[in-house]
Length: 237
Image (tube, rainbow, N blue to C red):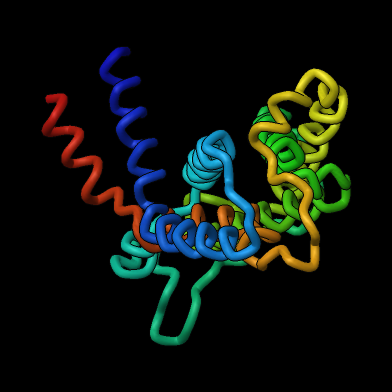
């Protein structure tokens, strides 16, 4: 049991490390642009956004996004053919609640998975206190995941996942609103404070979007399970 926990911790850390080639250049540019407008990101903010990215990589891993090395370079599932993409129709479901008679557990799991997203967005970035912005972020991130699953024949690109993920983000937003007064001190420390919107550079204004993009890019382009799992097996055997 302890070994499994240690293996999970190591693997989850590699998820985050895979985002660094994108996070580091972004943070250098973000810091530079923030200084130009006389704004300094707090240490608390930097810590919480890295926790946010760590969470995002976990979501991407659990939902079945595979790396470019496995799906495209090695073409593990035969998706790419000389005639183009080979995506079986039965791996795409556009009928809502088609599988609900087989059990509600997958629906509940998809809801729970996105609750932290809906909670953390308005907590870190005050503009997401507007419900529609959190909902849009939830549905966009979920849609990216579902589209990436087209390259993974172990997964079905399912409209139910999209709906439940978005519902989870909305529930997270509601939980934040209910706890907002109790979280005010924490939010003041970790959130981007209000400044003249005309002066806010794009990298700061759309910070959350850049973190989502960095998490996806790191998991899809950099993370390589072919290197990690053999190393862990040799380490713990």
